[in-house]
Length: 280
Image (cartoon, rainbow, N blue to C red; front, top):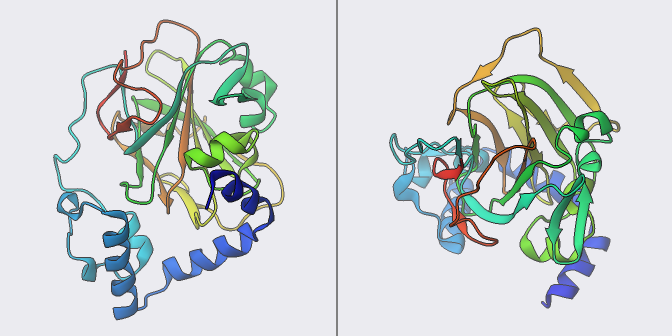
């Protein structure tokens, strides 16, 4: 299928129905059927099970358990750099936030305000800051970790579309990451500076979860919903798990204006691994 036809097909496909169906299958304890599906998935996407804490596909009762599998201790050494990569995946784009606009792909960008559910006041804190967008493919490890130590301030669920978030769709769909369903997590670092981690949903992504809330979706709420955690003193260490995707998706990170130098090896489409240097 050509890239253009692939993108056009997404405008008409029943993305929500497909995602609900996939979610039911992923949580189903199907015994030998589930194990066979996991083995087929491993072969199809060349998943490296040697890194998994449990490398035997038969130990996973559901597809979700396999998809959010833990890694062996030491499989992802944590950098001494200021910011660590939070996930396994590939760089979609990185760079400066240009007067409140975030680069998506050639000829396409979107506003930080739209990404942050219309919160213009919050978006101004990142208006001339920095962003990193990282895509997780089906073969990747799907737990999400902290790029630095942080205290959780608030979380916002934002309803939206469920377009695929792969590179072809990023090139073909306007405002992709600001129109898909997402979970916006606002933290402050040890210097009191804010940063945001946005977990972006997609077609077939059955749900997103955080360690402090559990599964955020489903249910898929009809309106924006916000949780304030300022009074709970929830603190997560650098490299600590903060959430999970059930099937692949994308994380968008926002940092405020100030000195920040991304890893020079990070370029669009470069593979990255959780724990490696993201920026100083």
